[in-house]
Length: 519
Image (tube, rainbow, N blue to C red):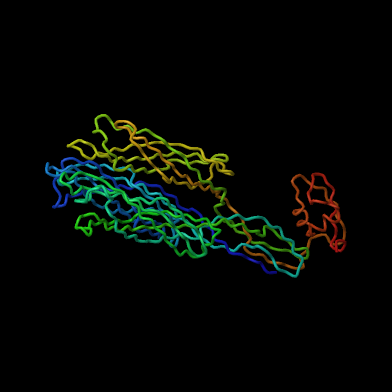
């Protein structure tokens, strides 16, 4: 007797950690920059630069990049900017961590406090929220059939396994020369750049993933005109990248998260000698994950009519894929700038960052709560604050359809800002409209017992040999269990008793034929 086996890969979330990491440090004003009179805005971005899983420990190294706009203590100069970076380390101590495990990490700066120590030093305290999932990977053989010259009866059942086929990262660099739009003054000094990746699309093909998207760059700068006014401009850099991903097929579910890890911008002169060219370099990291829902007909039980089969079984914990859905929700909000702030003359940029704060499953639905952080940077006619910023939080909650979901199941969900736009409605009011994409996957953690080995011992038969047995079905009896108990083929029982569909009713009289009769 030979077992036919097919290997499958199991991915189980063995460690799930959500932590806040404190980043604290002092920023010293460079010698070439004037003293600080007033801080206008501090914003930040956090990225994970290295991750490692060892025995009992997960180590995450990252950096937080800060951009500071301030009013200088010099009436001859307008707004100035400083950029600084702080490294951080986050450790997760867990006995389940083992070398070779895969992990996914998402992080962002959720809170920033900046305080002037003096005119040349700023203390920054920031909280970086880090969401980590560590997966155990195991390849196990599943028995899908049995080959034998003996009369082996097999019972099969469906095994539904969700596994991550690929979880990899790829870096690429985009370089472009961007011209200052006509009608805009040339550049004297760049104050800050805000970069985001939008309009992404990707398609899985055999062994590869083709991705498209757009890098949107918004630049705040001091113009080179006589007034040295503050102005801003927007550019877009489209891109198409092809990533090699082993074992990728068109049928797999593919997901990519793009992250800007570094940005460089240098102002150059054009052919007329005017500073109207931005030489840019955008470093992007693509987090690529492909997954597959595999369904196998596995051997759930077996017996032999001529001997005894001794089965060895082992329990495995696995994630069973339940359902997935993708919802788009529209969020509209009127944001009022406080009356003690200077009036809005023009909006430089509105940055929107959505976060999920809570996600729970219920019957056929997922209930989520979250918040959209809105950062508004605008130009004013105030000499004291020509640039001003404010932050608002917009809470949201939605109920998403998720057929098959039940209370207590695990769900993976993230909020993606698919589109955002704004308009100035009346004085000091901004009408914001956002479209938030909410992709969700629901999983049920279950334990499944699989056959790992089977031994056939001949000559140890206790089935029906010389006579027929009359059996009266009990409550809950199934034909398979009756046939296995007497070691008679189920088909012989149904044929001998003229049972059309093989169903068994309580109290039903069933004649168990001897093997000689059946043969």
